[in-house]
Image (cartoon, rainbow, N blue to C red):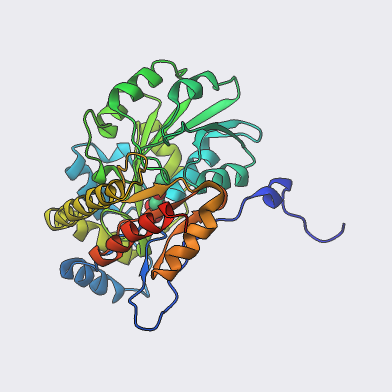
Length: 358
Ligand SMILES: *Cc1c(COP(=O)(O)O)cnc(C)c1O
C-alpha cells in the first residue's frame, strides 16, 4: 500500500449516529425528539450577546476565554485553575482520553451509555471496557469496580445515564470511589445535572473538591439551550485541568459561544425556570406512560428510554407516523427527548401504540 494510511484504530472508530430531523408531514406539526436538545428558543438577552459578538467575527476569539472562566469560577465558587473549557463536553472526553491514555490503556464505562464514549476511546487508540447496565438501565458500579485492571486509566460515570435515564446517588458514587485506585481518573459526566430530582443526588463539584482523581464534565448544550454553539467545561483538580487545557484546540470555543455562555450564566434564573418546566413535562410523560401501562427506567435527564428490544425500529417508525422523531438504537431501545407539550403528548400516544403491539 503506497498511499498515506491512517492509524489502524481509525478504521475501527464507530460512526456517531446523529438524531434525525423530522420529515415534514402534511397537516401535522413535526417535532425533533432525537438529540436531547432544549426545545425553547434562545432568551433575547443571550441572542443579543451572541449577535454583538458576531460583529467581531473577523477577529479570533479570546483564546484565554477570560470572561467565561471568570463567570464560571464566580458561579461555582472555585478558582479558575479548577476549570477547563472546550467545544462541548464531548470534546472534553476526547481530551481526557488523549491526555491520560497511551495506546492499549483501558477506559471503563457502562454500556449502553453515551455513544461518543467508544468513538473518543477508539480514536485515541485506547481500549474500551464496557460493563452492562442493569435491566433497569442503571450503572452496575460494583461490576465496574471489579472490572478495573492494571491498564485502566479512566472510568466514565454517566449520570444521569444517556440514553437509559437513571442517575447514581452520591452514596453509590462514594462507595464506588472508595474502591478505585488513586491513579485512575474518574470522570463524572454530568451533562444533565440540572434535570436531576432525586434523593441524595450526586454533587460533582463537592466530589471533585474531595478527590484528586475525580473530574466533573458539564455542558451548556442541554439545560442552557446552546447545543449549536458547542461549549462545555470540566471541573477538575488543577493538574487535570492543566492537562485538559494543554491538549485543547487553540481558539476552540468561538467568540459567539463564549458570549452566549456568559450571558446564559447571567440569565440563569430564567433558564432554570425552563428546566423546571421540562422536568414537569418529563414527569408528566413518565406518569402518562405508566397510566397506559408502559414503565420506563427512572428518568432523571430530559429524555425517556423505551427498552423496545427487537421492536425498536418498529417503534421508531411508529413515532415517525405520529410526527415525532426519536433516536433508535437498533435491537436495544429508543431514546425520546422531552420537547414541546404537544410532542410530549404524542410520546404517551406512542407508548399506547407500543403496548398494543404496534
Ligand atoms: C449531550 C451529552 C454531552 C454533551 O455534549 P456537548 O458536546 O457538550 O454538546 C455529554 N455527555 C452526555 C452523556 C451527553 O448526553
